[in-house]
Each structure stands twice: as C-alpha cells, then as structure tokens.
Length: 408
Image 1 (cartoon, rainbow, N blue to C red):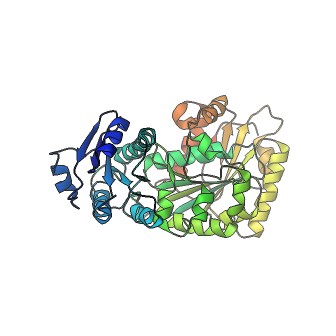
Image 2 (tube, one colour):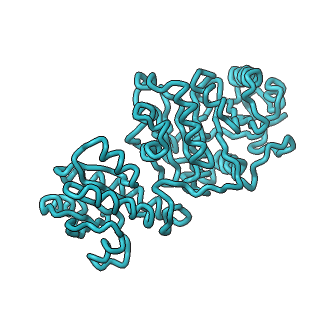
Image 3 (cartoon, rainbow, N blue to C red):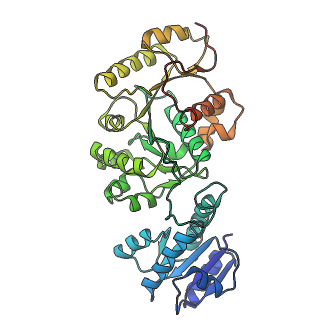
C-alpha cells in the first residue's frame, strides 16, 4: 500500500487514513503547519519522501495550500491530497497548488483508499526514471520537459471510414512518443460519440472532453492539466465523453481552443478522429501539422481515402508532412500496392499487416507495441513512432516505404 504522511489534528481522520493505507501511514500535528516541506518532514525525522502527503485544511487552509505548493515545486513526485469542505474556490486554489485530489473531512475509509491508490499511481509514474518528477525540480505539477529546439507537432489520425485501425495506430503512436519522453505527449479522443481510446489503454478517466469544455478547461491550462488522465507510459489522455448524448456539449470552436492550449503545453498532440470529415475533425485538421491518413486494403476504403485527400487538399489542410498508412495489407486481397497508389495518386508510406494480436491487445487494454513487441504489426507501429521523434522527423519525398511487402 501507499506510504502516506498526514498532517491533521483530528484523531478520527487519522484513524480513517491509517486504515485506508493499511497501516502505512504516519501522522503529524497540523497546528502549527509549516509551509516549508523540509521543516514538515523534519517533524517525523524522515530522510526519504513519502508517496502521498495528506494535508488537513479544515482549520488552516492557507497554510495547507502554501505547503502543498512548496511540495509541488520542490518534490513533484509526491502525490498531494487536501482534506477540506467542498468549495469551488478551494478546489481552484488546490489545483493551482498541485493537489491531485480534494476530499471532505468525513471521507470514508473506502473512499480514501481509492483516492490514495489513484494519487500514488500517478506519483509513481512521475518518479519513474526519465520523467519530469523523478528528481526535485522547480517545475509545477504536470509540466512536461519540452525540447525547445524541436517543433510542436499536432498529429491527426484520419480516415474516411471506421474499422481501419485508427485507434490502434493513434494509441500505439502516442504511447511510444510518451515513453521516449514522458510528459511530452497528449492523446485526444475526438471520436466524440463512440471513441474508445480509454478502453484501448485500460483507463477509466475521471474527466472527459465534455467535462473539460464545460468547466472551462479548454481555456485554463492549469485546470486542463488536472483533468487529463495519465497512462503508466507517461502519456496524458483527454478521453471522449462517456455517452453519445454528452458529445453535443463539445463544439468545433472548443476543439480549436483546446488544441491551441495543448500545443502550448506538449511537444506532441496526437488526435484520434472520428471517421469522415465532420466539423470537429475539420477543426482538428485546421490545427494539424502532420496528417496521418489510414485506409484498409479494400476498394471502398481506398476510394474513400482518395476523396478525403482531394477534400483536404482543396481546403488547404493537407500539409507537406502528411503520411499515408495502408492497414490490413495482404498480398491475397485482390489489390496490389501499385493499384492502391494508382487510385490514391500518392505514394503509400507505411504498410501494416492484419494482426490478431492487435485485436487481443485492444480487448485487454494494452498497446500492441508493449504487449506483443515482436508482432509484425507492432514493428511497423514502432517504426511509425520514430518518424515523429526529433532525430527522424522529415517530410522529404524520398523517405523509404515501411512495412510488409505487398505484390505490385
């Protein structure tokens, strides 16, 4: 269980947190509450950092928030929980101080156990080698370490129809980029009615895109960061609404504002779009630097992609860095690669074979590249990831074709 340090003068609260932490909890008096983490830790003579710090702000809100802010600046790998009566102003101040969760004073043992587990999981990811929270730093909570010399990339995975593997491509690409540079990548599920990015990654986000725009998170970077789900790879995720009806609250204007914020905060913004060229997808395409167009190896899919290429070209949304990916490539499909390229009028950059392992990985909520790294499709997906990393990023027309061989 999580290693917890709690500052409270309430014996009842201490007992509940102690039970929720399965005994791995040490209490510190909250009166007085120092604002210096070193002084606070010195009260229990600790030389190591706890996973989670719980601060009772019932009687000393300002001091608790000041201490939380200091912890977040100096030790971003420590998860912070605030105990306070539910109040919107407190919530906002807590988010700005780097607090991961706010619970009421009479929180139950089961509720606190869930909170501690969730916050501790996030803290472990941030302390992982190579992550921005692995060592004490001066950065605020969730701030990624960005390479100023590398361009910000907005990579939209597009297709005229569903069932071509867009979500598999988007999730594996995003996880690969995040693993290479934790905190650098965010994945947006823009299939607002039926998106399943969260399922593909084994996540249950507390907030979705609907929550983000409803509460103004698409305009406030601090609020936005706290509403993104975190994958163990270090990837942050903005999930689709939980039901189709909730998708109506997200407008194309919201999408544009959200992408503007995310581009300021992350090196890579990966977008899993809905099939076709609806208003939300066009809003994303208007902000896209790297379109990644995916089709299956069948006549309807290829013809549909040709129409989508023509439409995006006419709208001025098809950049020079666009790439074409042929999924489910099969030399026995009745089409050759030459047939596909002749219909599209452009060169195919990547070909990926059908993979049963990809279906299993989707059902298990684990990316194919980590679950079955030797699978032929996983190898193509890993190569795809390298194309968007700084050392390999190139939009040249002489780039090699990647993937399985399909007869010409």
